[in-house]
Amino acid sequence: MTMKTEIDQLKLLAKRYAHAMRSNRIDALDTISAELGFPHWKALVGKAKQGWTPSEEDLAKADAFVREYVPSLGHEPKFIDQSISRPAGQPIKIGEIEGHAYHVFEFFGDVRMEGDGWRIFIGEADFSQPVVEIETTHKETSPANDRSFVDKALEVAKSEAVKVRAGIASDWPRRSTKPNGKGEVVHPLNGDKATEWFCLHCDSKMTGAQIAQNLWHCPNCGANPLDIFSSPFWLEGSDKQPTDIKPTADKELSEPKVDIVDSRPTLRLNKQTISELLRIALLEDANTPSERLGALRAAIDVDDESDAWITFDEDLWPEDKDPTSAIAVAEKLGVELELAMTRMTFPFAWPGLGHATNSTSEYVEMMLAAYGEHGIILREESDERTD
Ligand SMILES: [Zn+2]
Image (tube, rainbow, N blue to C red; front, side):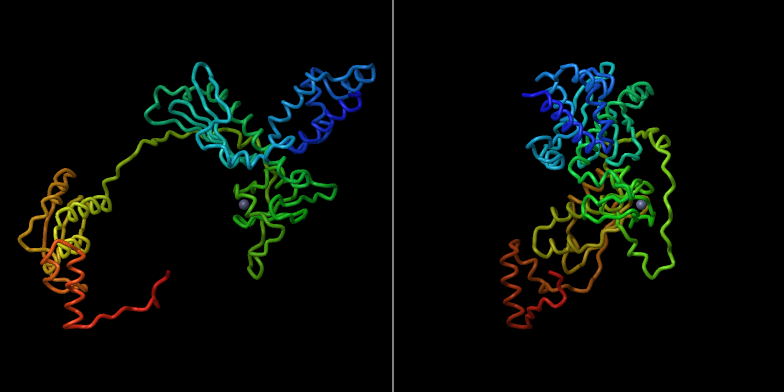
């Protein structure tokens, strides 16, 4: 291998790195030189002129470094394919901070870092604000109560987010993340090319550089690339004008938002859950087809004090039959239960037949026969049905 080829290999790696990091070629060359122990690219080239050549080890080191940011380097699948095929529970990084273990996960460009009772979220867009969540149950003991711990964890999460963004940018055309001389950028998903862009979500107007800088997420509202268009077609014929986006003060957003959360499973005993629990109890109490219909159609009302009324149709539910299971459920829930009978508009069931058997199939047979003999059966067309 000649020296030229090896230097060319470094140049090619720098090109890939610059694409992924949305940076200049020369900055990328400097970064790679630094990885190999040179202060900058010029120093590396100077040394090369004196006869130095990167060793196999140097090339492997540079390759491994760039691969962190360009997972698709070589013949591997693209970043997004790797991301999609990774099992949800498989971390992209594991480690420890001050003795506290953590796992970092990536999902569709978002980064989630998790430890015992705490987690950090960082979105795909460069300007997304990190969110720190601490579980209520760990409120007193969580290491995330300590700002210096959070700062160390954020450093880890942010450096993973940088790699994820680099992976995404390396999947996209170079012109999607680096404006040309005219300030034009190419939409990474639909291929449109323009100098000005508009957000469907918040009507913001932005330059190509601004949208590229935030990985095609609206710098104002965070809307994703699917909501970014080269013309505000949705405002045509309206009085609304797109609003110019303010230059982003990125420092402002780097301050994390800290939330205390409770993600334990929570049972909400509200009107809906109480009424559903009572109804499944009624279904248990029902023996005959009529009673089952009665259980399905009974009016169950729960008031603001969580007391409940069940009103049965007298044709469907025998007046002397106590719904023992519903009564037991009400007792367990601490719900005061009242029962009432009423005559509702009779549905379709032939009066009386629904109590003659416990079998729904026998009942349907008898009902069809009764309607066939004494009434009429209409099989309705699907006019009003949506399927
Ligand atoms: Zn927006």
